[in-house]
Length: 339
Image (cartoon, rainbow, N blue to C red; front, side, top):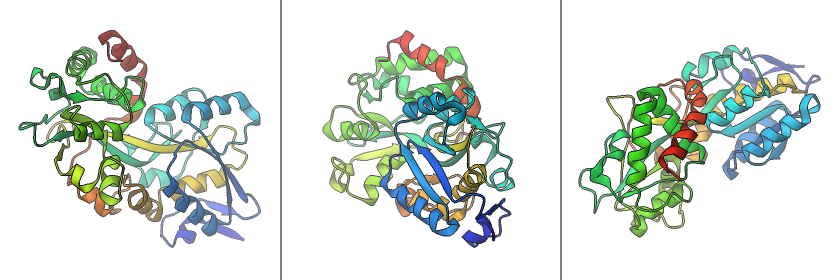
């Protein structure tokens, strides 16, 4: 019996075929930590008849495990957050190229690897949030965050966090190394406190009054709109405003969640089928409805919680090129004293 992912999903996309006899399981190495992803996995299993065996951990641990396992690795798919991690796995030879008409047609070129080693499946904009009671003229660009007018007002994550690294890496790609270095030094001088915590902690810093301006990925705030998040109730969010930076310029910086087929995948066809499923309208809709992310496939609607943030233009910089700048970004952070 031959099954196609297109038929299973009730769509007209021309997916590659997968025979039931060839693969009945898929070994997924994933660092996505969202309970809402259970729906993605269960729907794929129900539609395809393929059982997903999940090995979960942080991205660094999974990359190290795949490297240690070598040719004997059982990994079929590596799924993680942030382009830099995907590119690191690719650079280490842990991913293999995938030639798929479905992925080529549905995933924009700047959201996938040039050699088809990895593909983005959901995205989050990294934007500026501010206390509307204390900030009359919020920054409108990332560069503005380094302005002397915001001295002692900015909260941010540490330099070792991948979101910090890829934002600076994008600044390097868009503005050049020296301008990016000056920006990093200027932002560090404007810190209200030492870099600390996660994205939600940056938003809580606005509520507590520790800072007046912060940067966070959109889905953390959208999640708080959809459901109760400790420290970000409706009342506590009332004075938080937001800016999608660089509109009319480069556009807002985007972080990806994505994946690729492992270099030694024992169930390669099942792995490709799973990636194609993640690019389907059904899965794309669930990335937004279940986890408040933006789809990568054009035309797929976003959840109401995400729509509440408004329209915006994304930076269309090649994220594969951005990933190549991460090491330099960390070097710059170290040199300017961004902890």
